[in-house]
Structure formats: structure tokens, C-alpha cells
Image (tube, rainbow, N blue to C red):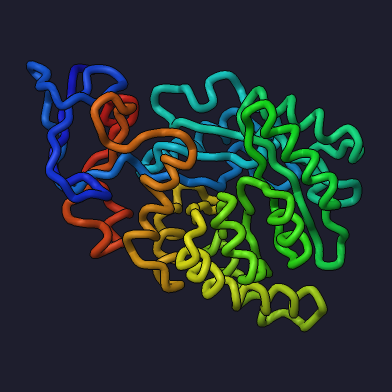
Length: 347
């Protein structure tokens, strides 16, 4: 493939820009012969910050062909960067580097407590061994994922253990994501200073200022949680269904409050089929998050949080181009004019 060019208004600033790529870097210096592939409103790509590609069902093994297919769905939708906070296995060497598939960061297989999480998935070391094992994982991939709590009533990881994991992982330059859906599990995660809380159903809004102050992000997987509400409401009432309905019903308002408090909120789907982060961005907006912030959660802000710059000279040559400002009509996210990954147009 030869050099290419895109031009238009770049988000979040709205400034006019003309970018060229001859390889995997943007430049504003004209490249002779570069093909103008699209013009319009430019994003540095969409980001799904909570996705688990590669396995068809919870507890089943990772399969190479499923992993590739899942990642192709992401890429076709404009998702150029993913974070996989937990995988069914250690991924193959091409994961995150294949030229046609999204860039990726991941946490390897989950860490859970005995008797919790899906059978067949995750690692369940002793509390004493966990900090060292977590640090080893983080030194390799940058992230660790703890299943901080599980079913209602299950004991969460003790705060002392989570603090020890955070200290050990931070010492090697890594970050800690924690699955937390019970009030106690969320409170432990915030008190221990984790880097991101995944889901956060039943997160006490009184903890939001502390999260903002210490830099704990929230990936609320809002669409997945709220889409189950009607089904749960129609099921026979049980303590678990009451817990879910109450928590999921309050979740949208809590997420909007998190954005208002200055918490970094990330768009993540946690669902199959893959490639649906546009729906999560719209769910954030429907919850009361301003469209600008909802789009940021699934694009430039998430990309920055995961360590990549936006559309600027010297940045990786990733972009998604839309006909008009997607903040004014978030349904546009379903129909990009062009998707550029690593300097190549893939859609």
C-alpha cells in the first residue's frame, strides 16, 4: 500500500488538519503521491476498554480463529485499540501487532479467589502468592485483572491483599483492574487504590471524589448491564434478581455522577458479538453523560489513558473518519467513511 492522506476537523479540538501517512506515523508534511482516502470529522479511532475476545462462552478455551474473527469485528467497527482485562489464556504473539487487527493491551488470564468466577477460566493462587504472580504478569503485559468480588454475598478479596497487589504491580510499572459489582468489593478496590474498576455496579457515589483524586478509572459496561434489566425483571424474584435489578437500575445515574465528579470513564462492552462499542458510547449519553464526554470515553480519552496519543504529527497512523460531527449524531459511529489502522485503510 502507498502513502495516504486524510483531512478535516479533528476531535476533540475541532481544528482543521491535513495528515499524511507513509507507514505507521502521521505527519503534516506533504507526502508526494499520497492518496486522499477520506475527509470529514476525524477521530484517532474508537477504543473498547473492556472486551474479552477469543472464546465463545464463559469458561471455554481461547481459539485462534475465534480470536481473529472477534478482532476483525472490532476493526471493521472503527475500534483500533482494545484493552482485554482478562483473557481465556495467554494470547498468541500476533495479538495486538497483526497489521489488520486492532492494537491491544491485556492483563493475561484473570486472578480470582477459590470458589469464584467461571470454571475453566482464571488463576486462583493463594493470597500470599498473588502479589508476586501479579507483578510478574504486569511486568510482561502492563496490566493485571482481579475478580475482586463475584456473586452477592461472596467475600471480596481482602483489602490488605488488594493493596499488596497494587503495590507490587505499581513497583514494576503496571496497573491493576478489578472486577467489582458489590458495594463491599467496590469499596475495597477504591480504598486499595486500584487503577480501574470494571463494571462498578453498586459503587457508592460517595467514593467518586476519592476515585477522581487518586486516578481510579471506571469502565461501567453500561449497555451490557442495563440491557439485562427487562429479562431480570421478568424472572421469578430471588435475592439475586433483586440485587441485580436494584443495582442495574441505579447504574446509569451513578455513571453520569462519576463523569461529573471528574472520574475517568472508559467505554467497554464486555459482550458478544464484538464491535459494539458505539452502542456503549450511546448508552453513556443516554445516561446523561454529555455527548462530547461519552465519545471521549470511547476514543481520545480512552486512547490517552491506555498510553497512545491522538491525531497529531508523530502519532501512530490510526483514524476513523465520519461525514459530520459524530457528537451531534452518535448513530454516525455505525457508519464511518474510512477506518485507517497503522497507516493502511482497512475500511
